[in-house]
Image (cartoon, rainbow, N blue to C red; front, top):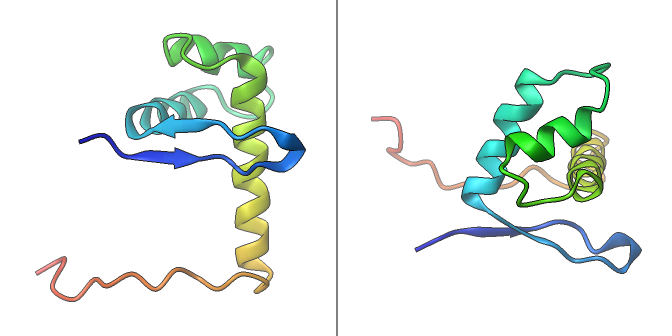
Length: 87
């Protein structure tokens, strides 16, 4: 069973990202840090081209926006049930 996340629908675009795509995205972001020339194109290619450079950039901006909302206190931290998860 594949897990899917959705990027925010700001701008009228609602793009689904699989768990695998998110993992590849995270790994590529770690490799291609801020200031990397053509960063979004390189991240897109590292993901196997399943998303365009523009989709990758928008996904990053949406996640960055979400983190800022959480950090500002405008959105509560998720309340995960972690009872016994690390035992």
